[in-house]
Amino acid sequence: MATYTKKQVTDLVHGELDWDSLHRMLSMPKDKERYGQFIEVLQEQVSWKDRIILPLGPHLFIVESAKDQALVTKCTCGHDFGDYRQNWKLNALIHVRDSEEKMSEVYPKLMAPHTEWQVYREYLCPTCGTLHDVEAPTPWYPVIHDFQPDLKTFFDWMEMPAPARA
Ligand SMILES: [Zn+2]
Image (cartoon, rainbow, N blue to C red; front, top):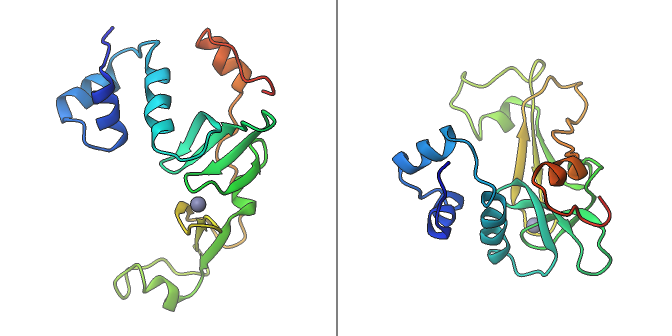
């Protein structure tokens, strides 16, 4: 099992890891230290003190609040999207591309989906405007809850103590 330096994990997070190392990292069994290294690199990128538990995207994290140990979804800018078990998208700004005009902002003419069949929903942070996710559903489809981790099992699996309120 390969182990990696903090520099390599930092390069991975920043999208700058060389291809050979990235390929080895993806295809080999994961080392136990990886989670700690990864979280350490992510934690250094944010200005707040809440402990990052799990990333949901490049700028979106499940964190343990330094104030009361609540587990919430948080943006890099500090915006709190609420309890991690609830769908954070319901507390985001939502921009829906549901017309030819709105689709033409991201597609060449005649290359976009017909918006009676497919729309784009863009989920943005209400504080900083970061685009956290895009869905491409049929217009009537409910807002998709992508991921609700079982944190207790995850930390059991890693043989680490789970957050107090997991
Ligand atoms: Zn934000």
